[in-house]
Amino acid sequence: MSELTFIIIRIAFLIVLWLFVFGTIYALRSDLFGAPVRRVRDDSAAAVLKAPSLAPAGASAPQPAPQRSATSGGASAGVTQSNSDDELPSAGTTGPARRLVITSGVASGTEITLDEEIVTIGRSADSTLVIVDEYTSTHHAKLERLSNGWRLVDLDSTNGTKVDGTRITGAVDLKTFTPVTIGATSFELRP
Image (cartoon, rainbow, N blue to C red; front, side, top):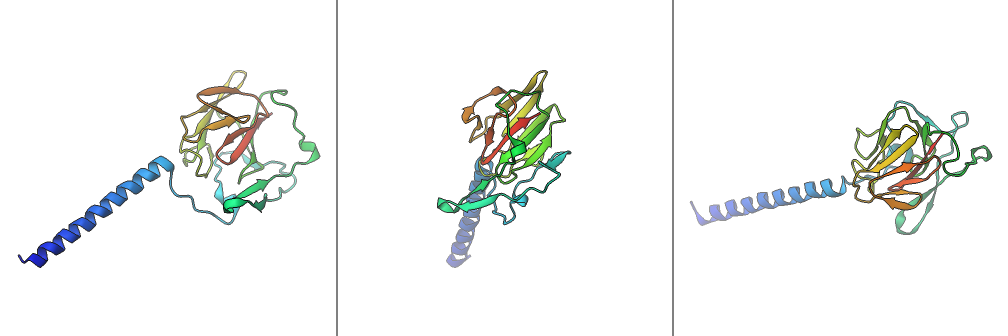
C-alpha cells in the first residue's frame, strides 16, 4: 500500500473516533441535563399533562390564555388572573385535598383530580403530571396519599422542589393551598 492510502485510512479513523467521542458527550449531556427543549409557539402544547381526569379550572367559563410579558434574556413570565369567587383560604384550613391545580407556568389553570394513591411528577412521559421544562428532572417528585392528607417526596431532583418558597429534601407533609414549585411550574392541592 502506498503512503497516501495509509494517510487516508488514518484520517478516516480519526473522523470516526471523534464522531464517537462527540456522540458519547451528547448522550451524557442528555442524561445529566435532559434533552434540549424546543420552544413552541402555543403554550398549551409546551406542557403535556397526562391524567385520566384533566379539566381546566372553572370549566363553566373558558380560561384566558396566560399573558406574556418580555423580561430580560428573552424569557417570559405567565400572568394569571383570579376571579373573586376563587379567593383562597390560608394553607391547611379546609378538608383533604381532592385535586391538584397548576397556579403558574405554561399550563396555568389546569387541574388534575387526585384519584390515585401515588401521583408522580416529572419530565418522563410515564409521569402522572408531565412538566416539560428544562429545570424539571425526569423523575422529579411524587405525591403519596396518607390517611390524613398528602406527602410530597423530592426524588433527588437536580434543581430541587420548593414548598412555600423553601427547598425541601426528602419528604414533607403537604397541606392544602400550600404552593409547590417545580422548575417554572407552581401548583397547590385544593379540596
